[in-house]
Amino acid sequence: MSVLDRFEITTAECHQRYGDIEVGTEIGQTAAVAGRIMLRRVQGKLTFATLQDATGRIQLFAPTKTTPDYDDFCGLSLGDWVRVSGEVMKTRKGELSIKVAQWELLASARRSFPDKWHGLADPDTRFRQRYVDLWVTEQARQTFQMRSKMMSLTRRWLEERRFIEVETPVFHPVPGGALARPFVTHHNALDMTLFLRVAPELYLKRLVVGGIERVYEIARVFRNEGISTRHNPEFTILELYWAYADYRAIMELLEELVVHLAVELRGTTKLSYGGRELDLTPPWPRVRFIDLLTTHSGLDVNLNTPLEDLRSHCVDREILVEDRWGPGKLLLELYEKTTEPELWGPVFVCDYPKEVSPLAQEHRDHPGWVERFEAILAGRELANAFSELTDPDEQRIRFEDQAAELAAGDAEAMALDHDYLRALEVGLPPTGGLGIGMDRLVMLLADVPSIRDVILFPTLRPECPQSSE
RNA sequence: GCCCCUCUAGCUCAACUGGCAGAGCAACGGACUCUUAAUCCGCAGGUUCUGGGUUCGAAUCCCAGGGGGGGUACCA
Image (tube, rainbow, N blue to C red; front, side):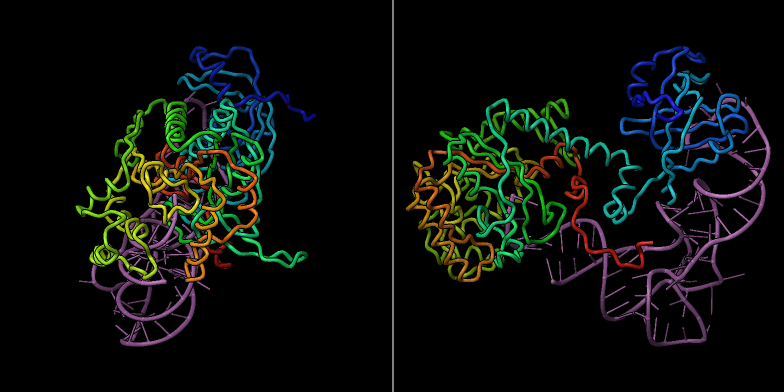
């Protein structure tokens, strides 16, 4: 027990409880707060300071009369951590304050405060020294608070719908579940190569085989690819699997979830992102991939279009075509070049070529296509989902096609996972699956332009040693 | 990977066409009992990202390297 009253309240509670007391009065109540000194106004025998904690700010009113070790109090630096207690009051100018009766230095800030008016502008410093950024940049604190709320709201929402949260391995002996280049590592005792997961998908579907009919994981995944405003090498994906459902049910689920989060976090379904409107009011349009492609590209193409024609359409659009690509891959490339950049959303792009979707169920009405959708919001792919492929024989054929791609040099193709095939032989019921890029969802809801704004410690090159001091 | 932009005091930024590297805030010393980015006086603070080059002279121009940002490719 220190000399101070240990009963602390947050600055937010302080404003809530005492915010409406009369100007220029004291109410005979004592409060204790703790936090960081953000501003200081020494005025001779009376000093004002602004204290910030995780919930907000409050002014400290420190006259010589009541403040112990007054000179030391005046000597506090911006950034110092203090605990203060004293009477709650409101100044003549109407600012709710705590009249310092006791105070204690908890930690001193030995590095000097960034510009108290401009804050931190250099993105490099903001990302490398996130501890400074969070201390100084209100917007950063809000964004990460929103991220935390979004995660917990999502968990609660799924829980209410009987989804069970699980954790599956990060180390995968066989990389799979997404078309992406993995990070490779090595286990010494087992003397084996391991891959950091690119997706939890195959493990989660094993759990559905095991009878966990509604399962999800909020998974950190790792992809050895480029970095951009939308890509970080490690990122967070929500994957869920829902037995007896199909991709249409998943569409409704996704719509409901995103609307729920928007309403809870932003109070509306009519968002604006980067100054452009995004209306999430359901239902979002469902449009077939091939229809979008033909409309946007003006090309009369389909799966049965001669390969030569598809190739020359690609070449016309400066796409580097590889010989082994079938019509599905060529159509996908054309879509990504001509159509995807035009989309803003929200929109469900439905029914992708089977060739590029090795884990998805073939479409019930359209052979050669699969029951799969991508949800486009604010011009970005936010989610990818399908009716899962449940037939082990068909899955084996798809894996073998992928293995051929891998052998032909496609570093993003999937490897054949024998145990996964065995699991399918044990029996996977019809299942709908969904993956949501959670970082991108935060970006959308917080209206920030870069994925680095929603990841506390984004991947950066190592700092050059000279500049660390 | 590739292209463009950028890097000056702890922070935010100046410095004309190549001509003594500056201001505000922070820090430090002082004045001030109702301030709100308090104000006022004083003082100190630099490998101008690094290394070469051109020049009488480089923060400025050129070359190489490094960090960061944006775009682009692969991808969520």
